[in-house]
Image (cartoon, rainbow, N blue to C red; front, top):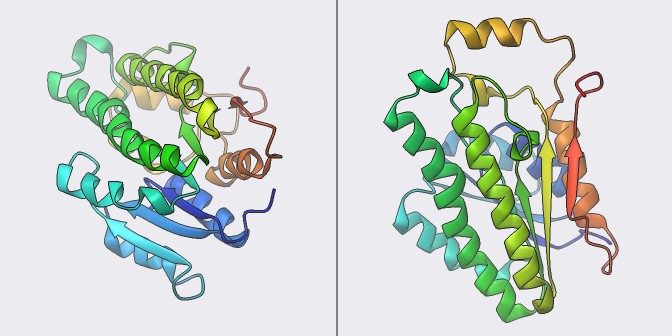
Length: 238
């Protein structure tokens, strides 16, 4: 299915997987609404494409006023790529309450709030496609990533629930679950155990572009085909 002219909203589009996804979908001819917290990074994305093809909105998904602005866009959307997320690796006994609240608030609660508003608009249109960017951690648990894994388990459950409830309205829901990806999301995880663990890995992490390719595939599927779950692992990481 062609993505030419489709209107696609992407959260977390200022860097990493979100940015790579925005670029690849814009190259397919889609109209992009790119959301992120850094306006300068969003502007740098937008100038790569013809004027008006990539619209930007800077803000925090935990800000209700910003979320209401997103809700207002719902009726014009064909696709929502629910990508924004945060991560802090650390031993479970050393995670602070603030760390835990930050991850659950952004990865689960804010994600759900935004998705609800957009899904209501799609229900009214009787069409749409929602892509959840989860993780291999949605089905597995790793040392030093306890709460992050818990948030991704929750996000995966929400994706599956939405698929069940929205399919009768003509809406597809896809979960893309990558393994380790080389992005800046781990920048704040500076615990010595984390640094040592990452340094001993025996495989090359996925790139953001490789993950974005999976999103393009899912959105390009035939109308009667819904890729429910796409798991991606670096070669050698099984």
